[in-house]
Length: 294
Image 1 (cartoon, one colour):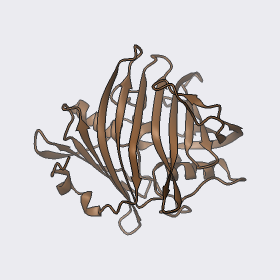
Image 2 (cartoon, helix red, strand yellow; image 1 turned 180 degrees about the vertical axis):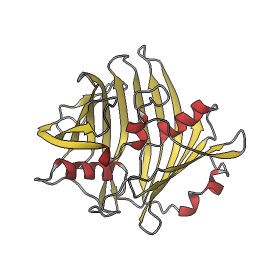
Image 3 (tube, rainbow, N blue to C red; image 1 turned 90 degrees about the horizontal axis):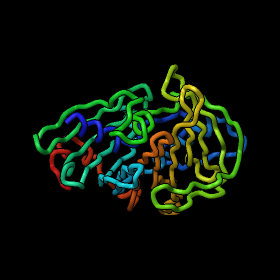
């Protein structure tokens, strides 16, 4: 049971509630010339968490890929409503529902994220086999999620204030060749190159070098260095632009982690991404969680 809880929390809760006083909800931001590294990274986090939209929906897969090429999959449906409501501090509410395989079908999580970056998210887990809801919390931030190639921090809990930032250059991204499908992504994308150093010390990494697109403010690629300064892991994030009523919304559709020591890969693929579908806040309640509509 503990393994299922860890999987649900770490593998599927891909966004943590963040908000900044100088960025207004439900507006699209992208970097501008002359911005500092801090300003660029604020926009990066804002866009990563889709705080520009009213709501979000997608289906997707988490794929674990071994060194020999064998894989195992989990499929999910995700819905999110973005509120940015100062009256009760709610940033957004998120519902993740597992649909395949049979071993995880019916498991679901409901998450409420808050505007205050120091406030912990609330997470409820629906266990259909027990007909019970449990209040749960994420494991330690440097734990691997479900034996994959991301940490809990990278998937669920990293916040803008967890690192300090330095702009170290500007360059066109050389492109990333996926180890899963062999395609080349984001070749020649103009980027800011930013060094991110964790505030916590000692920590499982000493720094990461991230490439943030000048065009849409999303981070494309991370090089992650261990405490001895050796590159040990990379994370690629693929982005698409979704036109919603003339608004150009950046959306992640691909995340690929690669452990350079073990040659293990973890891929998260988002399909059928939709924004502003008119989702009701009533969906995001514990009562709804128990209805098993999937």
